[in-house]
Image 1 (tube, helix red, strand yellow):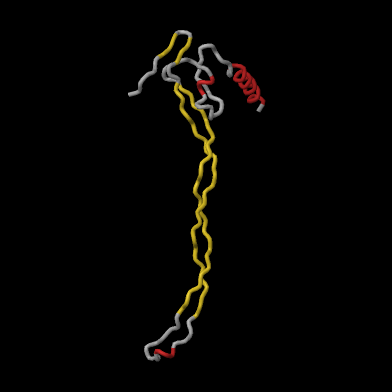
Image 2 (tube, rainbow, N blue to C red):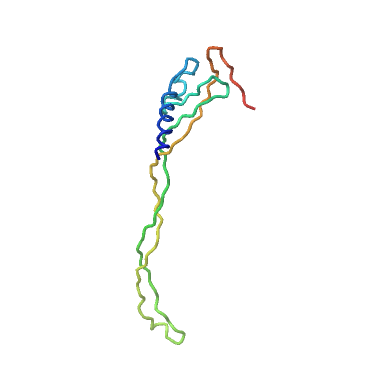
Length: 136
């Protein structure tokens, strides 16, 4: 266990100290945010025509759910009549209460995470500007 701590702490310290600094040739951080709707961007370090960044956004969406509800109803059950009985000798019908299942649909608000791809064209640094590359 001590050997893990011996390597883990310096590795974490090196990671924290080496990352997070901006260089002069990077695209502007404001260019990474599209329409100001999403959170902080992750800009690429070098200026390259194929570089892009992904911005994560939370979006509120509707999701359809359903459940079952029990609905009570009454039905008439006619009396049983045999062929040898007279037609006028019918008894009284029985009334029964029955349960029916009814579907109930409703919408719930859910938060979904969406990734937006933002390309940097034209990309300018100390060496000049790289024109937009068309994809075929």
